[in-house]
Length: 445
Image (tube, rainbow, N blue to C red; front, side, top):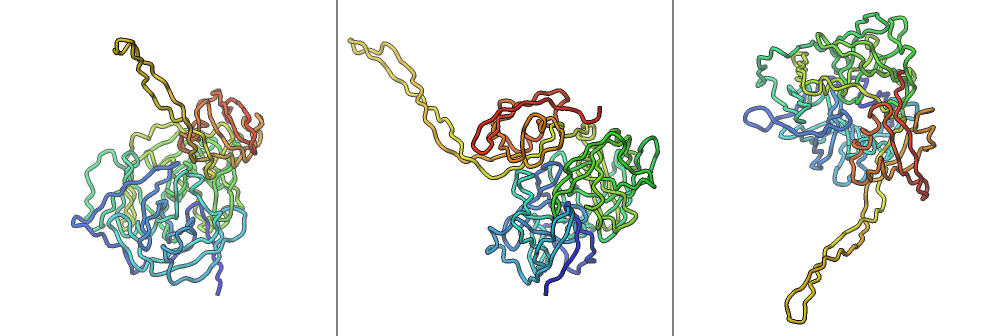
């Protein structure tokens, strides 16, 4: 029998499953393990083994059960078990997606193993977040790991340390700050404060390591939470049910206990996209990766405590994409590459001795498959749109640099440069090579 469940998703569920009797078991003598991760667009991507298959998951605080997508090519080896079909609906204004709710799966993260794991496997092949991140991503993991371990996140060195709660010892740290966690549907919330138009407003925020922005706030004018006159409408992210749009702006000040952020980025998602996220009526928004990465973090669900210590990212400026372009890794393209070789040609005179040597460069070519980066969103009246760029254009070079030799995040970062920086693009539009240029513009003049 098909069931229908509502979810909110930019990597967060809205319903509760309760505590499971099954727990992760850590197979180390000292009760701890260190796991390396990739930090992509402020998101933590960790290796996770599901039923013996090595995958990559986003580590998201508060997600109730693991979610798997982009798995159709590994279905046979993954062996999803004991399933029933359900429909899931999440952020965005699209249709529900079909999924399998599966039980009795084996999950391994580092040296931590859990059997009888429940997870959700998404059918829809178009639900694939890897193109936005530029690396393979197969799912999301959160609550099951956080409830069983004390989790330390070192955003600078890019590793997490998981420790059995009974083995964890807090170190003396004069520069650390502890904040109490509150839970709703097994998801962690923290109290903070924002300043909007000279008014200080207390807020309750979901800790959302599965979001790449700094802050999301839910507009509520009666509480003084709203976007002021300096904002622009933009694409905010891709949800389970489609794209999410809203307002991007700056906030006067944001506090987490004694930590203060001035002029921080803030997004106000459209109300229709967050209906189910707002089921928790006390919630005012989320604090996400662009804030969290500025600390080394210790999360202890058992003690309902999060410990923050400023790291080297703390004073990084908050910046926006000033081009209006959103790009994705949209497969591969065939590239003709030079392969030069050097040949020595020695000339011999009549006496049999060498008189000179010439060097000849032989140029050969080979065909190689390289990543293709395409424009998938274009902000209205942005510098890129006014220059004539279109959704679907494949970016070949940016400021003379071939994109084939760059990572997706390297390309994206160029659009976050200083106001007035000139951007020159060479693009492929349906087989026609075109050239465009524009200047990066601040939207908050």
